[in-house]
Length: 249
Image 1 (cartoon, helix red, strand yellow):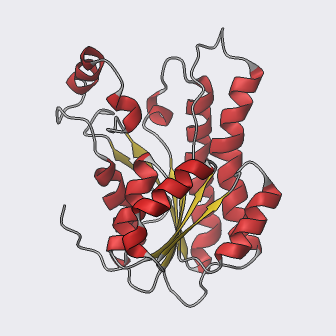
Image 2 (image 1 turned 90 degrees about the vertical axis):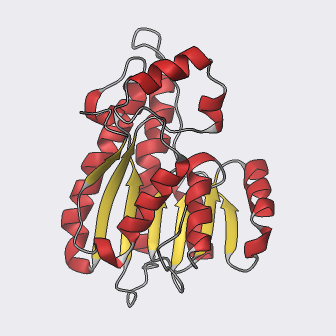
């Protein structure tokens, strides 16, 4: 895919950036000239991703961090330093029907997907690490199309992502006057290593529900992140962009 953005001189942070959609976001920003910091919980996966990105030595670094832990976020934010674009991508699932879902299942997803997003963003704000002179302070939060229409077996995940949307809109109002934009992306069905393990008949059933008749690609989400981080999107604030091939229609 042709890269049409230039982010030379910018600092980007991607949480959950060591795999899947997050890793694609990291790669695309690096190729567009950014310096990128990856935050991820899994050290082995983080180390493997940094090894794969060795061609960008000096432009990429990574930290193991638990986004559910305030102290961890504050410490790593300080080590990360200045940031222009923060992409809150870290998230987990613990899918079960409501009857089978335990309080622990529910709380772990909320703690990571919603409270974790709050912890990360506040750690940079409180330590005044957003670049005051960049004119490009961007917060991009990863929601999901299921937050817009619900999904069987995902009470916890849907609740967390609906919360992300509400939080994003609130930050857009609070921080807009301070030179920020805050927006959310709601991915639809995206090709990832996890979906690659699904039975072919299940994948075809999913595709049949998408008007454009294909799964999304990680690049589709990464390119949307880059657009929202660019000057072309400087007047877009508090918006949720569904990148779903029309499945929410």
